[in-house]
Each structure stands twice: as C-alpha cells, then as structure tokens.
Image 1 (cartoon, rainbow, N blue to C red):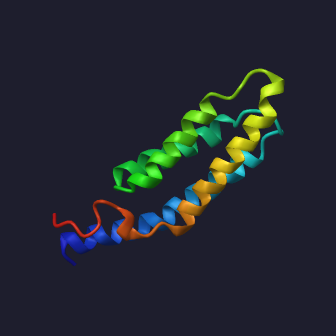
Image 2 (cartoon, helix red, strand yellow):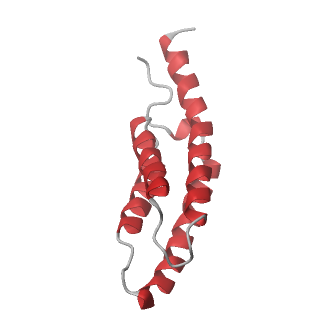
Length: 115
C-alpha cells in the first residue's frame, strides 16, 4: 500500500469517526436538563470533532461545527432568553447532522493529494 492510498484510507475511516463523534456529542447534549447549557463532556467532544475536521481537511464541516461550538459557549444566562436560544441551537444541530450524515472522503481538501 502506498503512502497516498494509506492516507486515502485514513480519510475514509475518518468519515466513520466523524459520525461516531457527532452521535456521542448529541447523546451528551441530550442528557442535560432542558434550558441548561451543555456539560463539559459535550463541549469537549464537539471541540475534538471541530479540530479533527479541520486537521483532516473537512473545511465545510469544520466551519459549521466551529460556529456551533462558539454558539454553545455563549449560552445565555437569563432564563427568558434560553427558549429562543434552544430553538436556534436545535436548528444548528440538525444542520450539522445533515452535513455529518452526508460527509464523504472527497469532501476533504486532502483527499486524492499526493504525499
């Protein structure tokens, strides 16, 4: 197996890892009480997903996950603001889920490059 084909295989495998990590994040996020910010586990998982997407060249997914990560860090402290925020975050997570479900190796800017 050449270095290029090994790298392609790594990117292909990473598509599975992305799905697993996002599923883990959703489970962790869903385990919190409604209106409460995500716990540290969910934030660490999302941060790790963000970093791995960027490292392996999934730039569109990286940008969306980074935006979601920043939004979650800005969880409103006022109770009245949380309902609308929860709805916004639910939409962002649903959009991220669509991107994650559709991710393919060719989406990586590194796929097919010669090493």
